Image (spheres, rainbow, N blue to C red):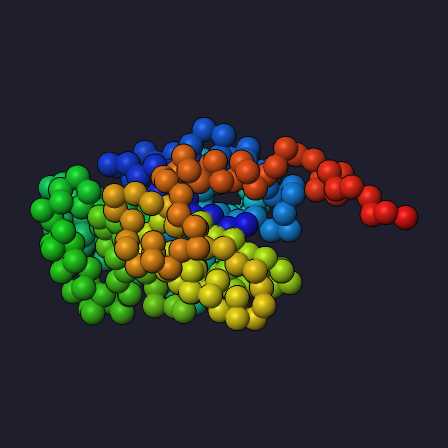
Length: 252
Ligand SMILES: [Mg+2]
C-alpha cells in the first residue's frame, strides 16, 4: 500500500511549508502498516518533512525526494542515494541563484537534494519558472520536472516513484498506489509493468481541479481529493481484526 503525500494525504495549499496531512492520516497509515505487508509514503518532499508530520504512522516507510531519501518513522538519519548526494552543492548554487533573481511571488523551496520553484502565489510567473528551470537545467546538468504550479530541479539520476515501487514490490502479490500529480505517472507505469508479471495492481488517482488528465486516464480508480483518499484507506484498514477471524471455517 503506497501513497503520495501532497494532494493525496494533504490538501494542496498556497505556501508549500503549510501543507499538513488530514487529521487521522498518520493513525490510519499505522493501522494499514499493521495489516499489510508493506506501507510507504512516496513523496517529492524531503523525508524529514514527512517524518515531522507523520510521526505517528507506525511502521510506515517514508520515501522522500522521489526515491533519493528513505527512512522509517522511527528511524534515525535518512539514507541518501549516493549518486544523488554528489549533486547537493550544484542544487545549493541554483537555489541561491533563484533566490537572487526570482520575481516577487515566486517561492523557492530548498529541499536539500532538489529545489522547487512555486508560482502558485503568482500564476503569471508560470513561464518565468519554466524558462528559469529549463535554463538552469541546461547549465547545471540537473533535470527539470514539472509539478502542480511548480517546476523542480533534481539530480539526473534514474530514480523516480516508478523505480521505488518496482523495488518495494519485491515479494508482494498485490500493490496499490495513490497519487495526484505528474510525478506519480512513473508509479502508475510501474504498476502496469507489475501487472504483466501477474501481480494484482490498483492505480488510484486523486481527482481535483489540477490533477493531470493523463493520470486520470491511466487510473483504475479515482477518488475525490484527500478526503476521498482517507475514506479509501479507512476501508482498506478494516476494523482492525485480522481477516482470518471473520472468515467461516471450511466444512469438515
Ligand atoms: Mg502529490
